[in-house]
Image 1 (cartoon, rainbow, N blue to C red):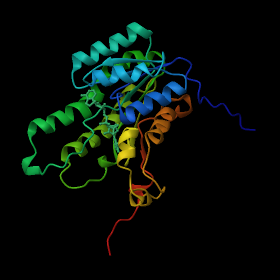
Image 2: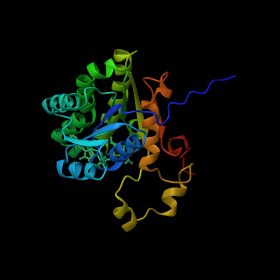
Image 3: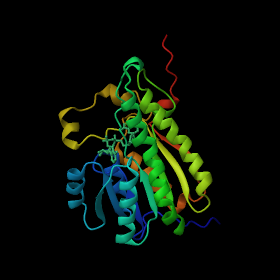
Image 4: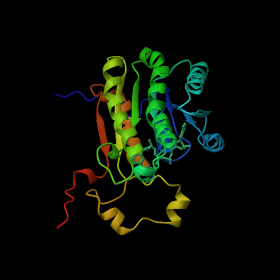
Length: 258
Ligand SMILES: NC(=O)c1ccc[n+]([C@@H]2O[C@H](COP(=O)([O-])OP(=O)(O)OC[C@H]3O[C@@H](n4cnc5c(N)ncnc54)[C@H](O)[C@@H]3O)[C@@H](O)[C@H]2O)c1
């Protein structure tokens, strides 16, 4: 007989730090983890919005303002988490300059390129560096939010694509360096409707938006959050260094035109 020992929903006060959690997918991940019993530290550049969202999330949530590209702020933020909770079990690197913003190569400004790489790639490295000593103590886990754009592109999105491709490489490098104590994985979302409910109501997606997906619909923040939560759980104990694509099957579609 197989012995089933699901750990789902049994976070029991373990502590997770989620970056870029004031809105969108990061906020969805934070809410999902809280529903599973985690204590969640939401961090974001947007101080006003971060403080506002934790107000309605209850005592399992708190907010720390942090620019993930600034090592001093990252170090201070992580120290604050340890001071407050005395432990850290999970890190979710979600913060990003998340708009692929189409800019032709000829007009791609080096300062913009550097900013995208600093936030989307250096940020997760800095977070991992400062969290690793604490994650190691409790057999912790890291999940990095990459993108299907790490593996495929539309024109004029070099900075974002390169940052997410680099993040996949950083993910497997960290998994090898930090194992066996710390597991490190990446989730690559496809099209996720991460807008606020009001924006979704004001400008609903079309039938075509949904129908083009093999899964029949555009993704939700919960689709991503469920995968992140599983990767952080003990049920994923044999999984590290991997990329998990959450895109409703879009990247498996043949797209040659007749
Ligand atoms: N929504 C999608 O369709 C989609 C698709 C693929 C990948 N992703 C990835 O998922 C993650 C979340 O995407 P989203 O759509 O929720 O984005 P979003 O823009 O709605 O939210 C990103 C959050 O990160 C914060 N942030 C930006 N720069 C920061 C910095 N330097 N320090 C700290 N916080 C910072 C922002 O203030 C914002 O709250 C990103 O990594 C994004 O690249 C999203």
